[in-house]
Image 1 (cartoon, each protein chain N blue to C red):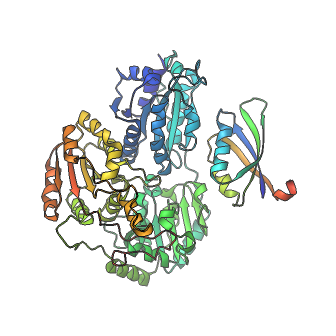
Image 2: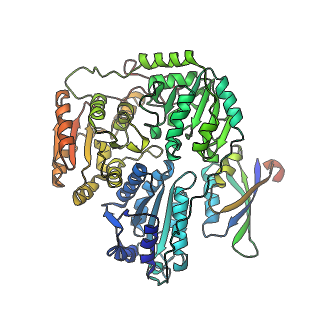
Image 3: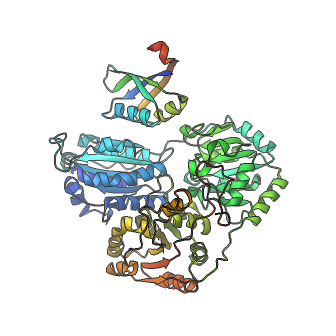
Length: 84
Length: 551
């Protein structure tokens, strides 16, 4: 099952590493990552797609704790088969 | 002023008068500023020890612990201690020097990616790129370390930032007021309904209660809602000594009464705890008939491993009074009292040799009120939790989540500096003690009257116990019978000591240790066959405890 997370994050040097580290450690696989600086370059729009069998709240609740994450929305879930 | 001086000014603004660390090339400007500072620096003999001392200081006092190290190996040596602080939610600020930005990224001497290393072991971490950001970053570090669920924060400061000039006027009250804790009482009525309806309620108390400063609210809650209670390792001492319904620690080496009662309860009220695997045993079989009320400050703990029928997030001080409903469970209280009676500890161990549980009970009875006991990890750690009675969780410093051997001695140094009026005892094992033995030099240098009790079975006892029970008695690499002479070792650091082997020597040895005004090492030799009981074997439910009689 793929899950798409729309994230607004402070544009700090390690923010993407932090996202990926938590995603890996909590047992989800990276299925996609898009990243665009917002107009002031102080924030980033990040679309993180992950796959995993565990309920997605186990990941989002941990990502929410990252200090550089301003907003996090679960855009939707799709079966990996359909998105392939 | 220089960035280095600014660091010390900001520390003082946050009320920091004690720091632990070790100098080196990339942090020399800060050490130079320390030379004429009012902040008292305690030189450890290994950065891991210094950071454990900061943890001991923080846990014994409730304040933020601060440690410092240089770049490269200095910073990597902090990692284990930061991980320890992360898993036990201890507020620590670690400051590391970094190579100058001109050479950063070139594999310079003593350069390592500390920010990268910090990701898994800190609540947050910073790399300061300009002296203009330095003060704000340090203020933020203190705020993050203490807010919500506390934790360690690392600030990596390149040498050129430490040396850069800045016109800095310390603001009068730059320490930001702590933000109010978001607390939702929306589910309080549901929680009250569950508590009022429960026939077999049970309070499962974790470290989050005392860290929230809610000890008084907890006693009031347990008085207004009489129910049995159990605590985690980190919460030992949370329940008032005169509470008759307290059953002790639960989990792998918990009391039989605690484990049996939790397995039978119909409502489990989890207060600032996280259903750790050492607590639950087989998770699917843990408290199988219980509905769960989960109170925590960290939303990520709710439904992480156990479904909560009702969850309340936020400030324990506000939540506990809001969920008080009154209980009516006299039969259940009587049943738990009977379990407690039936499965009380026995100290009638045969023979002349010292029985560690009895020795620790004697220590507990003899130690002055409000003593702090630090311990390491292994069999002695579980015996400390089982047989010493604590009046506050701040008096029991034990490495819980990470289970870090080598924690005890440096943590005791931090605790003694935080609370110089209180007696500080470290109970260690012969394995753990050697892991940060170099900190005896710190005790010597600062003449810290820390009492050291080494429980010596000439083994890595807990691993040996598992080899005996679960690995066909194949004792792979757990024999320590060539240990050094611990009393002679202490003497090399000008610390007097004494070795005992027989039960009838214990009382006089403890008296000599407590009477001696300075640091003291008591070497207690025990039988290597003694094990920690009860034990919930791996994969089993908590009622399936192995006891000494069954083993």
